[in-house]
Image (tube, rainbow, N blue to C red; front, side, top):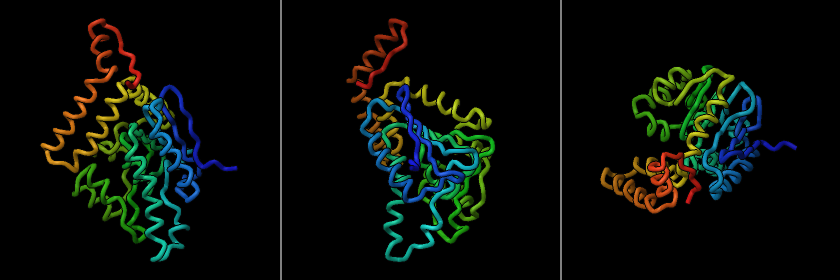
Length: 255
């Protein structure tokens, strides 16, 4: 029986592998497993960081199933889009930071999945593409504009051209580029570092960063200060101060 995703939780890090090779297409079956699992992770305080990857070396994820899309009608397309977008939205809304470990193609929905993640680590052979205009559709206009601005988003989306890992790094879309055999080790290194930080503060920092795009300066600063006040009252904050003066590394427990 095919499981569609493989999951492993160790040392506060959950690694999720999309298992639909060779292209790791986001079929209905993948969505039906992936989304509920992510919903469950939201409730887990023991999971502090998530790593998302695709099985094999050919693709991180090459997007939605064109066979499904080809069968859509005006009566069914909205429901399909709701289900399809949920897989990207839930990655974006996870309280834990999500690291996308990208090797090979991240096209269409795979590109959107990468954009929805918080940190993107890529191999030097990774290739990204907002492929909508190649098949007569509109994709990635919201997330790409917010991440990199209107001018670059127009260039990438209107041409439908492929972005290399080097260009992604130069534009700030990739946080780091590594050789293929170092991808997971590097992703784990970043995840382990985040997992050592105060988990309540990490979650509230992610939330404040994401909300600030929709707020005025004053509103954004107010949310930042609210988060500061809430974190100041935590056990982890007081423990960190004590550890600093004792010259000891803090051990955060998420309280």
